[in-house]
Amino acid sequence: MEETATIRLGNENYDFPVVTGTENEKGIDIRTLRQKTGYITFDDGYGNTGSCESRITFIDGEKGILRYRGYPIEQLAESSNFLESAYLIIYGELPTHAQSRDFSTKVLRQASIHESMRHLFEGFPNNSHPMAILSALLNSLGCYYPNLATNDRDNDLKYFDEAAVLLLSKVRTIAAMSYRMMRGLPLMYPRKDLGYCQNFLHMMFSEPYDDYYPHDDIAKALDLIFLLHADHEQNCSTSTVRMVASGGANLFASVAAGVCALWGPLHGGANMAVIQMLQEIHKSGDDGSKFVQAAKTGKGARLMGFGHRVYKNYDPRAKILKAACERVLKALGRNDPLLDIAQHLEDKALHDPYFIDRKLYPNVDFYSGIILQAIGLPLDMYTVMFSIGRMPGWIAHWREVAEFSKGRIHRPRQVYIGPALRNYVNINERDAAGSA
Ligand code: ACO
Image (cartoon, rainbow, N blue to C red; front, side, top):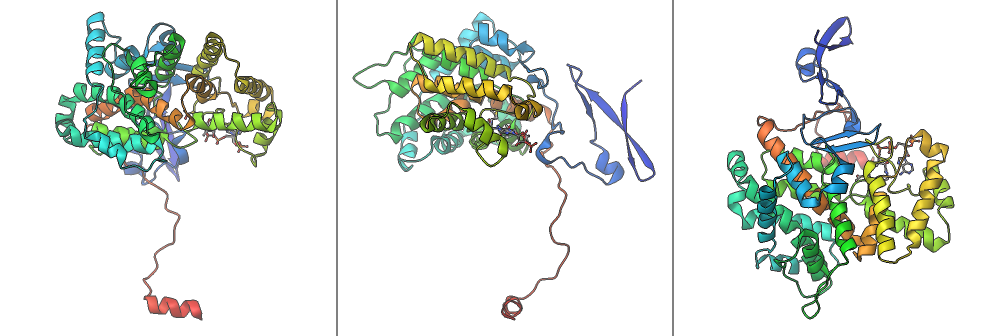
């Protein structure tokens, strides 16, 4: 028998179908609720609301499971690489040799940006945040490639493959150029003999008179960071991308909005906040014990890189990054006091009833910043790195909306709690009433 859920309002019972996902997760399909009852659901922060059906990523936050298109993140981290996983996320299947070669070649060919885009960088003040630049420049791609960004769904889907590789490639060029422009460094053009991450590191750190060749472990660690960030179902930035896409906006505009949503410290900005927190703790001479106490009061800063809306267990990405962090620092022969503090913080928190009761565990941002620091990236580029990594997810979700949403715009409702009806008062009467 079909499973249903019954809602009782006054003396009336209303039945709603239960929907079941691939992994047996259950939802009550309330799409006819308002039409049948006049009521809506109220779910501040959407913690209980499924906004769509999606085929891309599965998370079980209680068990600490993350899978892209069915593949466990641990297996992808071990055996795949960022571009291959990006292909998987965007197209649903792992590529064959031929598909993989074709995809990498197309990404490589799109690496340079239109020369006149350089002037856009020049227009920004020197102290601009690279996330603001990234969002603006990604959106501007629609002006340089208007045939890919028409806001006509059928047309934009027709050119989707081209737009997808263009974005995957140019996002890293734009990121590297913003870094160099802001520092007054000469821009470095991409090279055709380098892979995805090597090319990015080359555009960041080479000089016209001195090529930069990253340590193998550095390029691998960056690739791993990108892969682990590649998608995370309906998070704040991805939901933003889907929301913008639902209005029919093109891929470039939609991901530019995703960058803005990612910027905040409760989301992608947390990797930067973690390092700032660890540096503060280090400077104060604390080993993390005092900070953990303060984080519990609600008055001090939060323990950044801890807690997650969905994971009520160890974030599987954090486990992988913790091991990678130790591996990279060892390979580079570095001893980072921030890693010691992070490990101590983690140990303290995981044994503290406050964190245990609230199921607060390290999330992806807790260890990624230490690796980014070892790579030599400045703090303000950390969330930009997250954006490069998240690009495949945003692209895949844009396509899912464009292909499957049957044109319905995303439009939540609200419970209005403002003033009831009142009549307009002339400004002279308002002044008179104020001075009375
Ligand atoms: N440190 C201390 N206490 C915390 C923390 C933290 N990092 N996170 C949550 N809590 C506490 C809250 O104060 C609250 O306590 P209470 O029940 O006594 O009021 C309880 O745990 C539940 O917290 P919420 O804020 O309601 O949880 P929510 O699901 O809304 O927020 C979030 C999740 C934003 C990630 C939160 O845990 C947080 O701010 N973490 C730090 C920032 C961070 O690392 N963000 C990155 C998330 S991963 C990502 O976006 C890539």
